[in-house]
Amino acid sequence: MQIKRFFAPDMRQAIRLVREEIGPDAVILSNERVAGGVEIVAATDYDEAQLAAPESAAQEQTPPPAVAAQPPSTPTPGANLKNIWSQEPTLVEMRDELRTLRGLLVDQLSGLAWGELARHRPVYARLLRRLLALGLAPELAGQLASTAQEQRDYDHSWRLALGGLAHRLPVAGDDLMQRGGVVALVGPTGVGKTTTAAKLAARFVLRNGANRVAFVTTDCYRVGAQDQLRSYARILGVPMHVAQDSAGLHDTLANLYDKDLVIVDTAGMSQRDMRLTEQLGMLDREHDTVHTYLVLATNMQRSVVYETVKSFTAVPLAGCMLTKIDEAVSLGAALSALIEYQLPVAYVSDGQRVPEDLHIARQHSLVARSVSIMQQPGVTNEFDELAAVAMGEMVAHAHG
Image 1: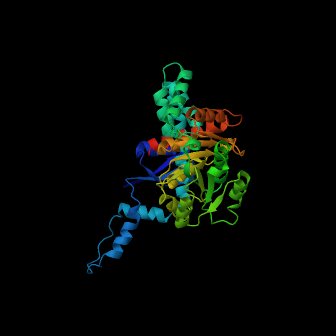
Image 2: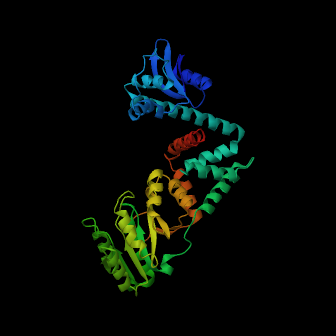
Image 3: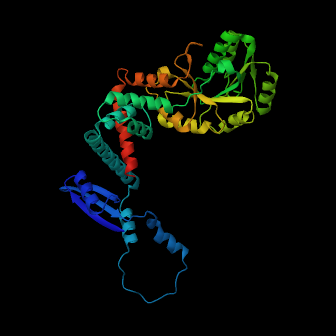
């Protein structure tokens, strides 16, 4: 391990000196403003475990027999590093500064990367920026841009990229109104499960009559949770049943064998709720007869979308239903997650009207809607910034 001090007129030049002399693996131990500029203490071949090693080793070893006093030895690199850290009372603050510096470097690198792409691969760069502006995951956007890029005709390449996105997007390909069966809707609180259940039931009633459909709810956790579904059941003229546990669900479904469509509305729970396992377990035990669909709101942040899909795939999912498209500022996060997890879309919902605002999912319609949202006034600038952030993520990942 090597520890060195660097002086420069400003932070940018100081970091450049560190990278040139020590290399990209240098760790900044401290930085402060001094007369004439900035002083940085940096190390290479750094192992944070060495900080605790001398102390823990001393505690574990048996004291050796007494020997004659020896002249002071040269401090070890570990001891030097320990002394430097002990002189820094604000370790957390220093690490925060290090993260800030890394962020600044990533921003600068992302800007340079865009410039390099624009010069050497102009069509690819333009495609990538627009695909990232759709909100797509950086890896997916890069794959689509690489596949679709052409030497001259950007418009043709853009159409190829959108066609590639539509081709990758899995859709259910059948209509529940024709197939029927037992359909369970799962998902977090507030994504529109109950309203989606009502829309499905209303579509079925219009085609087949109210005597061929029934509601079942497993939501026994919240006071008044069943009131909304009961209201829809009364309006549509269909029966509603409550199942409090796995045995109750099994018996209720057995008693509804003569119904062409049974819609199970489950309790809305966060993907981090410990009770989620219990709810999903009820459905898993009925997986031979129940087709389970994840209801996914498209107005959620990308990280929440991915976490939600990952959590609810604990049970076999027949597909998903996208909701709140009319409230979304981007569909890219949802589309990226569905492509990554190969979760087919059955229906999309873009409003509160029952049942008018429920539509069978079509690949090209979803992609066209995604582009339309991006082109709305006030959205383009926001997603230009999103594209820049995504490019920064790509650069940060590339430079580890």
